[in-house]
Image (cartoon, chains in turn purple, red):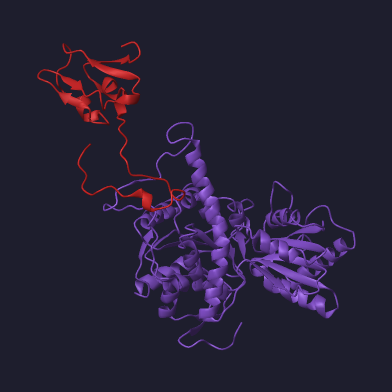
Length: 408
Length: 97
């Protein structure tokens, strides 16, 4: 990261939850609906404070549960408001009914998932199981590596969601505990520059609650009677097109952000020390910092290791991932969650799907770690790299490797 | 067609693969899919208006000495027949009516 501060930017030290709240404030959000849940609570407390202090001129609604959170925001969005909420784990589960409907209505909501492992066993700590459980619902999902990336991505999320070729809700995911409460240096961009970057908001041009434009919103569509099955197909296909369009928009928006604010984040996939790499580990979220250190150490010892970080997870950046994986002969995929159906990690399954696109078959090991707030250290990644190197040599573990299994 | 306060939104100006919307009122009324119909026994009706109070679609209409139903909007739910203190309303099947 550049040490030179951009003119008019402000330097603060804050955790990821506060950074997200600053981003919401800088995005001039109109409507916030919240219900607190660990480890998200301080985020909405910061927002309540910003609104009480007059820093953010938004309406805040303290509702009785997450189902109402998203229902309130759907209405606000249909009325033309820029909207925000944050949740995780059990709160996200309680939100599920309106959560499913939001992408189908093409509402450009932005919601942070301060990722948390799902129950049971009872746990209030970080893990990607909640966000991963909703990966196929139609929301765009981006995972952050640092506090600064939380702030930058949350602002960018509005520009991506509201792009007319996308019009989809966006989840910005940051790791519970590690990013939610870990404080770091963070640059606050200038308000006017952020407003110029985001431009005029127009979120209900396609569907609205507006007495001047009376319409029935999301009526019974398709199926066996009425407008017929092909109508349903048209809208579903449209939703898939919006997801695919977002890959290009995410890339363009990250590019513009880099030009305007001097911070260049990899939009879809980041390749780290992949030149001349024989094998790579694939990471997602805040674990990537320790993983990069482990790769640096492996390189220092003369091993040809590299790293591929996933920033945008949904839609899955198939082409970018295929290009990155084409450079190596073995991969080790580190998931902070599990896929119960496949006895591996969800990201591992996506990598296997990507590898089917490549002309040559290469081994891909599944690593699972960092569940329920467990630390993923440089040593864990050193082990993952070693196992991946062994897989390259022909000794591939057939079951997932649980990185924290031997931890005390 | 009832008069509109505003002209209807021109849906052709936006892509038709985003959120489904409807801008044309349907000509169908609840009576079009009714399977049971209420029939009042005029001798029993005392005009207490309990049916009028309970009817969810407000299809109960007042006559000189009894209450009757607007069958265009009656959906045949039978709440009036259940609530009538005089047992003056019978629900009969449309098919056999």
